[in-house]
Image (cartoon, rainbow, N blue to C red; front, top):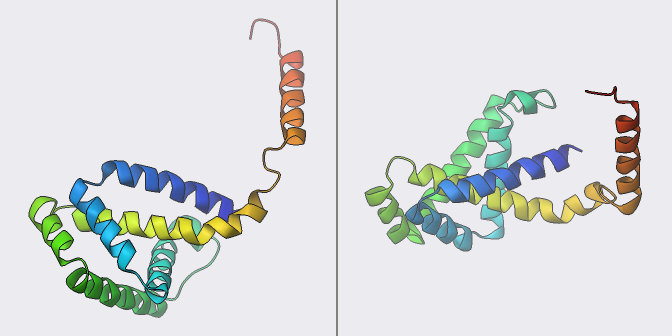
Length: 155
């Protein structure tokens, strides 16, 4: 259930983030994504996880120690700095010139959501199986019929 909620939130966030990110931020996000090694992707997933872990909703499930948050953030900063300067310097310069206020944030947010979707895709199948199948549809339709049946006239 937790993964289902997270997946839905990430999908929505990705769609909103893609729509809001400018062309230079999108290009930077794509460049960074295409430059990530498997280890780099793990670093970005950990970064996204610890930052989501700071939210009140996540804290109701688990609390991540501050020392772990600092270590993961330092690793992410190092990884992304390397990629921005070595692999995506042109795209980073374009963001700095044209979208300096939100470009880096937008591109990294888009990157994190894209990686999270990639990571969750395979594990979501089991947790979502049977969510909306014909049997579920029949139960929902029956519930609607009963609701309408017991509804007071005029309401």
